[in-house]
Each structure stands twice: as structure tokens, then as C-alpha cells.
Amino acid sequence: MSSFRKALKSRQKNHHERSQPAFRKHLGLLEKKKDYKLRAVDYHKKQNTLSALRKKALEKNPDEFYYNMISSQLQDGVHVAKKPNEEVEVTEEQKKVMRTQDIKYVEMKRVAESKKIDRLKGELHLLEADGKQKNHHTFFVDSKKQVQSFDLADHLNTAPELLDRVYNRPTLTTLETKSIQGAVEPNTVKKLGRQRKHQYKILSQRIDREKKMFVISQKIQTRKDLQDKINKVKVKKETPNAAAIYKFETKRRR
Image 1: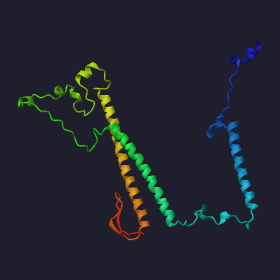
Image 2: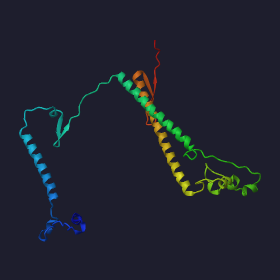
Image 3: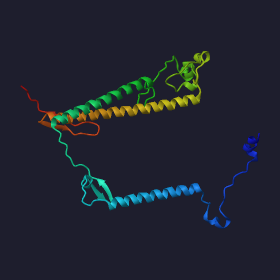
Image 4: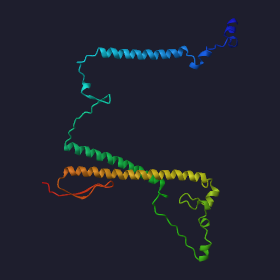
């Protein structure tokens, strides 16, 4: 029981750290031992580093040679490594092989983009794509009186709110018999419209990328053909959207 009384928190005195005396308040908080220790360790570390550098400078041999002397230069007081000035010689045969590999790589990427485009087109069906020709649905009636009293929603048997939609336009019978979530909810329709617009934007970007890759492969192929054939006539200049066109003299090979 006596040991419990000694360990009881309520009977123990609170420890108060000594604060800065009143006449030294202008100096800030009183430095504790842990603060002094951190400052002392940092100071001695810097002093040891300076001593080691001073010793290394005194013991250095001025006649010693090392390769960094000739492979670096001093710029604004900082040693900068020199760039190797080695000219790599590439034969014509090696250039042809390199260009063949480039064409294969670009074609592989272009085919991958083309497959992604086809997949997106299959999902979107291009119902509301920009630049697509608008579809027209013509209704025929028997008299002018029917034209004046013609009601499109009544004729299609659907809700008036769904007339502007070119897809997923359920009839009134379907809306009454089946529970279609988000069929006429405006928030859901807006959310789906934003998602569809984003998908169309991605599709447009992929189509542009596929066209650029096709032009790049054509330009690489043209440069490769210029290496193989000598007599040529330039027909059309190279543009950012098309490769140059050359006519080569036909020669019969034995």
C-alpha cells in the first residue's frame, strides 16, 4: 500500500522549469540544456570539418596529377565537367537500319492509337459528335389541319423533356411500366452529358495524334528512300501535315 501512495499522481509535486529572470526578459526565452546541446553539436561538427579541410590542403602534393584536372574547367568559381567531344561515325547501312526501326516503332504506336479510336467510336456511336451531319426525321400527314395540330411528343409517345435527345428516348409506356433511374432527372442527364463531352474530347485528341504519327512515318520513309535512290525530282515540298513527294527515275536491274 505504501508503494501505491508513492506512485499516486495526486500526491506528487508538479515540476516547473526555471524561466528567464525578469531583468533578462529582453534576451528572449531561457536556453535549456537540450537547446545548448544541439547548438554545441552543430558548432563542433563545423569546426571538425574546417580542421579536416585545412589539414587536407596542407598535406596536398602540388605536383600530383589526377584526370579531373583535364576533364573539368572553372566557370564562375565552380568546376564544371567538360562535355566529351567524340564524333560517332555512323555508316549509311546503319542509318537505314535505324530509320527502319523508327518506322516500325511509329507504326506500332499508330496502330495502337487506331485500335483505341475504334474502341471509343464503338462506345460513343458518334451520335452527338461535332461536325457530324444532323439527321432529319420527316413526318407525313394527310392534311394542313393535321400539320397545325401536330404534336411531336404525342406522336412519338414520349415526354416533352426528352424530345431533344437523339438516343435513349423511352416511351411513356416504358416510363410507366419500368423504373428507369435517371431517365428524366435533370442532374443525371447533365452529368452524363459532361462525361460524354469529355469522351468526345479524348476521341478528338487521339484522332489528331494518329494523323501526326502517320505523317511522321511518311517523312521517315521518304528519307529512307532518298538514301536508296539517287536520281530524283522533287514534286512537292514538305509541310507540317504532309511529307515531301519525289519522283525517282526507273531503272531496270539485271
